[in-house]
Length: 214
Image (cartoon, rainbow, N blue to C red; front, side, top):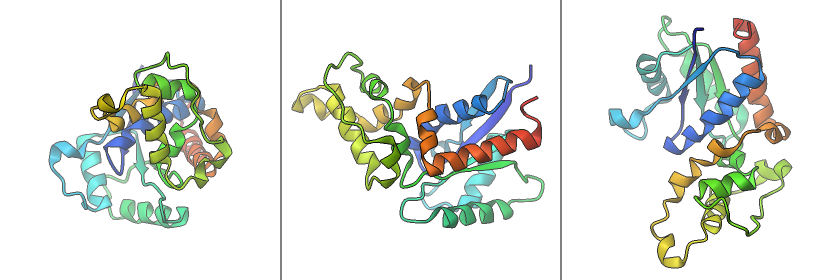
């Protein structure tokens, strides 16, 4: 059976945590072929931090050819409409020979908000799944209103690690944050969020229009 290949182009390296979420969405919406994801790692190409989005998309398609291109941009202080326009304009500037099928991934604020749904997963990602303390996770329906979801996640990981102050200094919180989605089996609670619902609608439409569910 042929593989279904997709490439994820992100804002930064921490956003590779989106891959298990995208895998889940593709399966939930009917892709039956084995899924082969790729995160476009521009670090190995020594790109400047401010490389234009269109140039990153070109390189992503050249080095990581795919059936579907996921383009991630955190909304942060911008509106979803603004990010949609930014992504669409970048894709429109690609050479016609590339013209990828693409889906926009635009979390409100930042993608870390989507990681705050599973207490057990955070404990496991912190390397201490047996931690008996209770983590105070935000109510899912309010995740898009968090001012600093990355800060909330990092603090929960530090708490779950249960390390003393001295050992906390060597606790690489960003590394552990990237692991959270690896321990989540069900992302359906995120369907309460407008940005996630918009992502799933785009994924579903792309699958249906291209016959990837057959």
